[in-house]
Length: 469
Image (cartoon, rainbow, N blue to C red; front, side):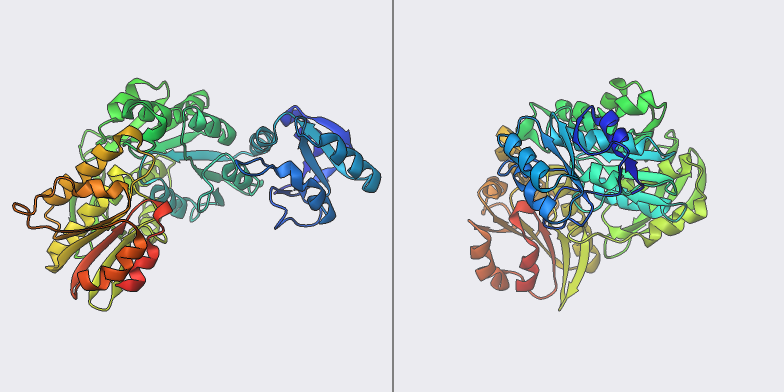
């Protein structure tokens, strides 16, 4: 992070300086006293079970040069008086809300630089698409991007502070659980361009229908329109046309059809369900490319990243090499060979769209390798009143794909097996109330030469199932 004047921070955040000099420079922010460093400026964040303002004194004792405090904090007078008496040189800023302070400061800071800001959202594939794009951009110029789960109102501003005058690209994955969150994050990032990977029934607990989810994701377009940028869409996604009709900014659709500006053709896959394909601009082939991550759906994730990079006029040869070098992130479509089994580890998260994509990959791998297919599935969460129905749909999908063995665990996943009729269906089914029960029996179910998918929402913490196979 490049130095910031306190006067700049006050201007961006519309906050009030209670102590210290507005010409003082800040070189780093911290929101966590456990990892705070000397001379950091402390921004306390309030969560569901804690109030960061309670840790201000601790931050000062650890060497913070200043802090911001919420004017509504219950102990504000005690903290301010204590600090002024014992640490008279400390910077003290008062604000209405410390999270808004963090976001407003990050937004102001980012606008200091001539950075091309790109946002990626959607119901599935955000992280993989981001990884494809970042691998391209960082081989072209200095790039800052959100890592791990830094896709929210805390992680994104903190990542913005890694930007400096040498950085050309900033890439943010934008997550959401409610309306207006994407718009808020897009404004913090001052987006010039964006990607919506696809729309599906995730987070239905917080929305009335999928159309509302699509519109919430499409909020990314508002700031892109203001900045005269472009939004890239998966043209083969069911909701692409719906989004396009409800946005003002320019958009480019990508997919199979040759009438899409960027499209793919001549695709095939190996026995790990890793695809290669021709990448075209309209009817003209640009290059042939082979991915390094399994799953047909990853053609679309790569296509969106490639399309945006080509739009930015990045060298096609660089793009091809970067895409082919991109590997699966931990717990996301990882191929693991263990003893005589092939394991597809995709247990970072799950919703109906990603669940079906993972089942597709399992089906392809098992057919290519002539192995028995085993799907180990945990609950899909945050589906609200549609949870039972959507889990049952996954059951139908498994049957249609001819998956040989289905192992479900968790309260919601019991519904996956509702439509299985033992007299008519050859698929073997097993149900366990919890993971502990599953682990006791899994070695008796999974056999030699099985292709195994492990898939479920992050709260299920399914990754250690691999140790029992």
